[in-house]
Image (cartoon, rainbow, N blue to C red; front, side, top):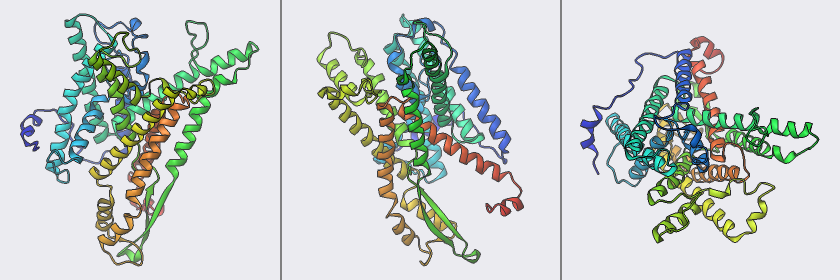
Length: 461
């Protein structure tokens, strides 16, 4: 399919212009901080007609969705970055399957691809907002439902442009920033919230543990979610530090030597975002069949029963924390074990598929990396400068590393959910990866603002 027919419509879409000058590091920090502040403010604004007091029970089953989509259900960012990620999934699948004709290696092709993604994001924003409002029964009355859908959809559209601002004027990407912020907020609130709940106990795990200890009861089990979260953080940081470094030498510059790092998490956290987003959408889409996967209706039709069975098996559903000390015995149930196996297979398979597509569409496969190395005048030591030789060496690592890293991030994210880590496994994996790359990006930005002589002294020029 040729998408050239969309160019006239794309011209009318607002666009954040690229900076025509070097943006200093401090200014990038200001843009990034402003975007983050706006995201938190939008998460406190409720659509007209929506009552926060009546939402608590209705959104109980959507915690996983909120982590993945950086959303806060009930507010104008109820769908969060969901439409942006979903549009990206659809276009990447279509492009990878060669069902759409776009040459993303040219500037015109990239502009068409990005414009198409914006149009699709806007369409999906209204679609997902409608699904969420219907699924949660957020409001009553057709007119009020329609008005609420418009408000929530506009919230996601605003986030789409805020993401564009961060990508062009700030540090990193807005999508990653919002996910990390949402997960970090959840971990902090669940860990140290000093407020008391309806039952009289502290809402935060640590204050509740200290309160129980003062009263003479030592309940170490209360700290298990925090311990699980710390373990996942350590494992992810260790995985981020693992890499293979290929030796390179420059054709000129006196044979200057360098290294090209191939990370163990070569595909980054993108496959997890896309796979988790797709499975999270299943829960939302099921609402159109009148099925709430967490609270199915008593009398279901044949179609509704099929939707429920498929939806519940490929989503996390009741499996969160199933390997924690108090719930591990439930794995003796055949139905629970079957659900676990199907979920793990579906999730890791999607991670592999999206990982391969991501590597191909972003030019980080063997061909793309070999061309980048050749373009900067580097070569494999003791070999002549030939892109085919570099590609042959890279072929020994990148294809296998793509699959292995996709499976690793998928199992790590799912495993963290299964042991009951705070903030969900996907959220923690994304947050650690995002913060790690954010740190590296800050280092690069700070170095680029230094004088050339100082960079040479530091060995970075």
